Image (cartoon, rainbow, N blue to C red; front, side, top):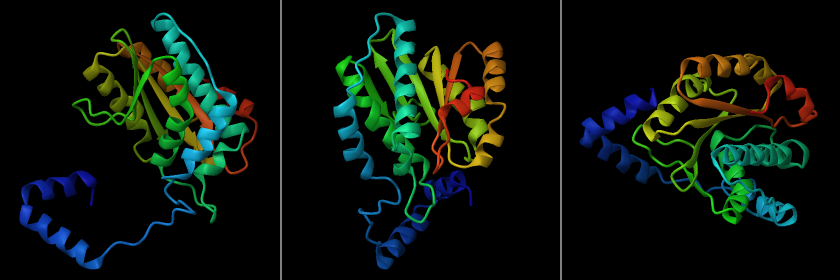
Length: 234
């Protein structure tokens, strides 16, 4: 059943919601394996903390264009960590299954938040902007702002995230620039997103926003990031 339908029933039928909660409590929960961390709840923290302490990205900006370049540089830093410095391993389980989308979002936050702190940039994860939660909002004052949506290429709502979700969030917040970050797990993901750059160009010609993107290779044996050049970086 679609999530939207489940929420609709839960809102309209509190007695069914109460029965569901009671049933879940009777069944009890399963303990979470923090060592293997299959959903990427904890491993990202120490790994990114140690990496940022060594690298200490210190970028700067003075106006909105430079701010957007700052965001682009942060995405490049994140991409380099994932593709070339072992960060991809935090997005995979020991049984060679890939982790969920929110694991990549936590890893992104761990890498970029220190650079944001140094430069006085506020980064918020999943702020509700009235049309639902966008993945990240970054801002320095009211003039320098951007939204970032992180999507797995395999996500069934991938194209909707680019064509509808991100533009809707930008309109709601009256923000000019939005970033669409694509995480690639499998070779077949590359086939799915072949036209992502063309789609970005088409949307920018039709919409009053500046959509930019970054494709990040998180395959288990990632090839050189140069192999993703055809998808562009911004």
